[in-house]
Image (cartoon, rainbow, N blue to C red; front, side, top):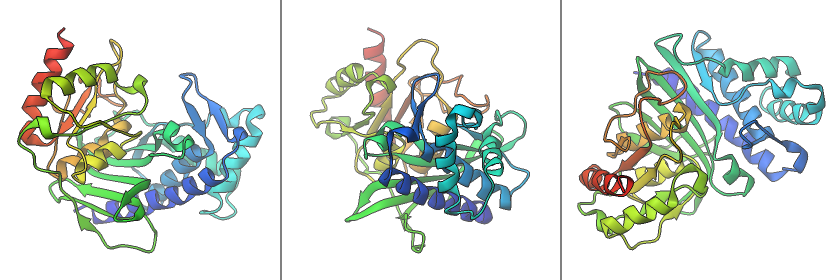
Length: 325
């Protein structure tokens, strides 16, 4: 099952990764603007979303997509430089496409996730600040059916394995998790698995670089409660899920940073499935499965805890003890 969906998703993410790498090599100040929440948006975010939306549209024209970006800002007359940059980079994949068509591709990501029982969700660049620092970021694409994530693809252009930089990880529900080099010509996949661990005291945390994304002070207290002495692995994006799925860390915490905050589905769907199919376990801080039945956010969940299943109960208890203080 999902053979055509997987092929299309892998192609879309690999093409988007090529453009993201190109933008990163030539990034200049005019290639960035600020959204209302002050997170940086680059040419690569918009170009990546356009490419993924176009690729999926070609194979599955009736599928909806819940994406992080839309083209509203790009249509402003004072954003001509940014708009031209997006168009130029998308045209490296889809030659001679007119600008308005490209903006319309971006806007295919405007679904809210409640219109149909089947839809895709995309973060065109997860970890934009990592992208801007030339560190970790990911293109994250997942297929959701009836509230269940059934397919996930993560493109991590700066993640390394055995001296190979740039990994693509993918999973189909109940079919395991896999990785391959992100190079378009390489199609050889290897199975991946978490590091089996029985005691949380020997685990290593993987957490966000940005303290605004998760409470690092509380994470430090939780590590102490678990008896963990190894330093945390800090990186942006769903590359953290990929790191756990490959057995290079054992715990990922995304603790609520403020009351009422709702995690976005595109920040977790692909990474969650890949980690689960690699043998991991993902819940919210109360031990509840992540619920993708509420549109664009995980509004019935609070925070995220990902770990090896053998230590998940230990981690949940430590989180509760710290947060209840």
